[in-house]
Length: 225
Image 1 (cartoon, rainbow, N blue to C red):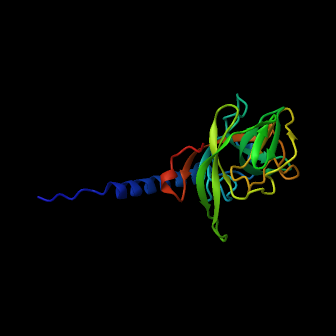
Image 2: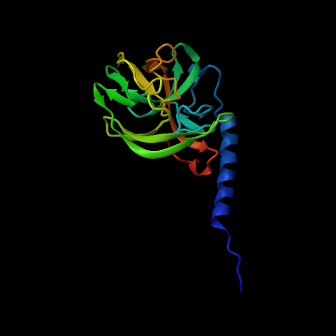
């Protein structure tokens, strides 16, 4: 007797799709971001990523939850991917990675991050193709950075000697943080002092957590590193 066996891969795809639809519907009802970000009271919020500034960690078109109480009793940690309000425009929120801590000195030299004069190790980690709507596909190199506290993550380097690959020294003020996007050649971050600059502790409002929707279904339910 021939018995039909369900296709496991196909079933998994439908299950993930169904779960994603449910989660997105719930997020739309319970986690919609109010215009006045400073008034956020709920413990979790959903955020979308309409740019490529955090590729490959957070990709264009993805949605993730943020813990809005992560820093109620503890300061942001180096490597955290945080949500913060822009000092020059509190109605605008950005998502970047914490790289420099209060009192430190940060500099970029030939695309390498230096913290207090010490280079952050960056090992080759393969290649990456970046796609954005209305733009030609770009190819770049992936690098694995390891910060002084031992944690590591992957960044994207699209251009050698890019506009922000070589900078002066940034002295991080007390109670402020230095933020970088993982897509180093396409990120307006703390390197651009007149646009973003140093971020006060009070402006850091949450920490990015689980990805609950992605065009790449295999990324749904994962935690960005």
